[in-house]
Image 1 (cartoon, rainbow, N blue to C red):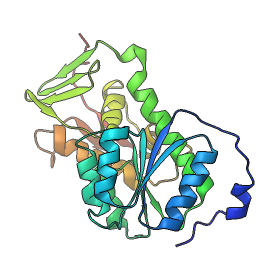
Image 2 (image 1 turned 90 degrees about the vertical axis):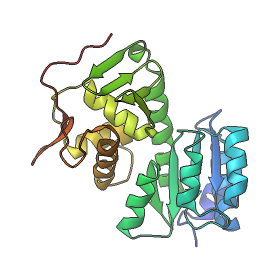
Image 3 (image 1 turned 180 degrees about the horizontal axis):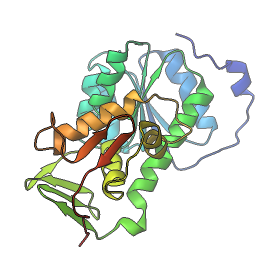
Length: 256
């Protein structure tokens, strides 16, 4: 498997850093792809760690606490989808799958197990970097905005603590992946406003991401399964046919 960006071109880039203090974990069993990708991001100023298989990757996740993980699907030891589920037990940082699998079912499965993006091989390193930057930026913004502190939204069986970013359904804490949490917060803070799938994708994943609108559909479906009384008949996150989605309330939710 070859990366499409010409090796000679990026090796001539020099040591100019675009970002600093961002820790990246690359989990890839193909040595050429792993080393080439690591070298590219190191030249861009990232602190890069690598692993060739799943168990080694899990150790690095717990020890080094990377801020973003690039994860191959076909891995020895623990395959990528299962590894992603294990990673989510320890961290909510962005996980971007790198895979030669092109079947839409594989992409949906990747998103369902907690990935934030799914990139097919061969990939261009500059495009990959753009996705990495977008996910790091989005993750940083949603978890650090000061105007979201000390607020709790309560509506029927749903409680969202925007200080701790905890979500409770019928008094039980619910585990949400980062993008699911970002999506829920956006919809709750704009109650009854209809967002198209395109708008949600731009706001949550960023206009400089390169995915598709199926990503939004998968995350909405996952979120409904976790917070709705009856996910087959969603009362909170409703589909407005022909337009998009909205968080439906009869009376405006107030924070306290």
